[in-house]
Length: 234
Image (tube, rainbow, N blue to C red; front, side, top):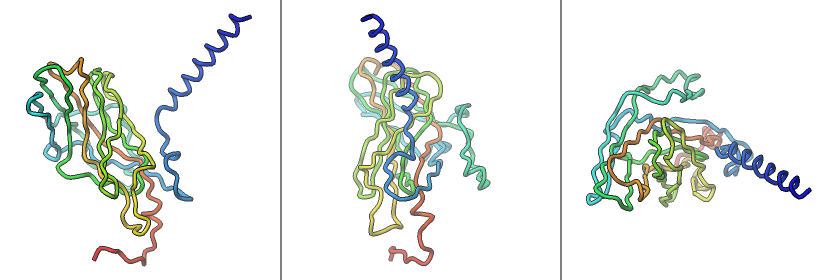
């Protein structure tokens, strides 16, 4: 009898773990619902076609880093329906690769940041990016700036996988993305990415690739704004 109860408990735990694994990807519709209606849209922020728009860096005493454009991309990436319907045919043939040469094993971070912040309109629910992690235990985070200029680091996950994978992070509702007095100004700014190297694997040469930075954002306030409202930009 005790054995049957134990097996039942184990089976229940396994099933619960399976459900949690399936729900690991955040649902944008459930994040920070603060309006009666939502107009969620997925938009592409940058497709990593221009390496000159990005800067890679590492502390000078920790190693060397370089980045370049390479042809290719994830085969599993799906087009954005809204762009197809609008007839948007943006170039999407390349990715950006980073090559890091560590001087020695240690605690080190590598960054990839745009030359100017990438503004995302609306109330941003999730951010995602396609990455080739090369099965290292390094951790990727995205750095964002909220409406009032506060900088936040959002963990996207560990790069312990092979091939392309889309990493997604939910933007917490605690980030201020709008001023209630000015409906014309919403959203946040993306300041770049940070890779925190695992101290046991921060040696030798490391390669990582990026493609298609996207956001799922609520544009309800943007599309429902009164056309005769004044713009406070004078």
